[in-house]
Length: 209
Image 1: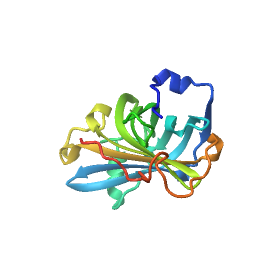
Image 2: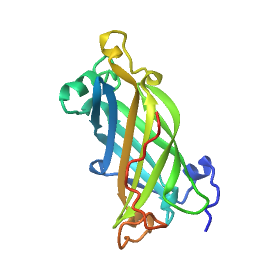
Image 3: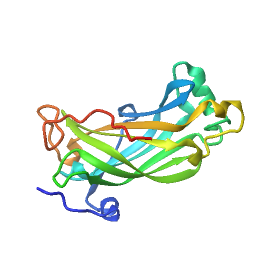
Image 4: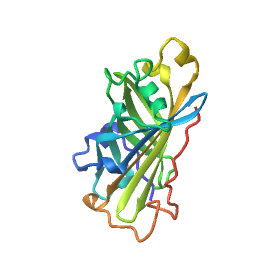
């Protein structure tokens, strides 16, 4: 059955939406940056919510607040430089936020491939972005993954000097969140499924930078 078009306002303001608090342990936020060589920062989530109308996980939306000051990397000095006043300045801007506004199926039929419209806030700068997202049902959990690329300078993540010259402008961000399906009136899946077809769709998607 084709999924009817739903406006962003209708999605977020739908009074039938069920809102569930996310377990921070079930949220993963990572940022990949090139500084001479590629490095990955793991950023812990403080809190988040997942909302959807009962029985309609294909209309899921998430909101996440993450702790930039808790970022880690291997080696750790890369994260320490990223958190310094040269870049993220986490003493002044300790948190970031992602708020999904609308999730639109990428095909006419119900599937797990979506366009995710969302707001990203870093260093008190808010940008409206679009990225591909994948939704899957694995056992008694639903999982939403997305990945996107940002220009760090649009968020003021820059500093004149020697550090800035060795850091690439593009940052690749990946986000994954999982939630139990029961609160949304959705039964457990007998096996990994993409909610419509036999495709787990758990791989992180890449948006070209």
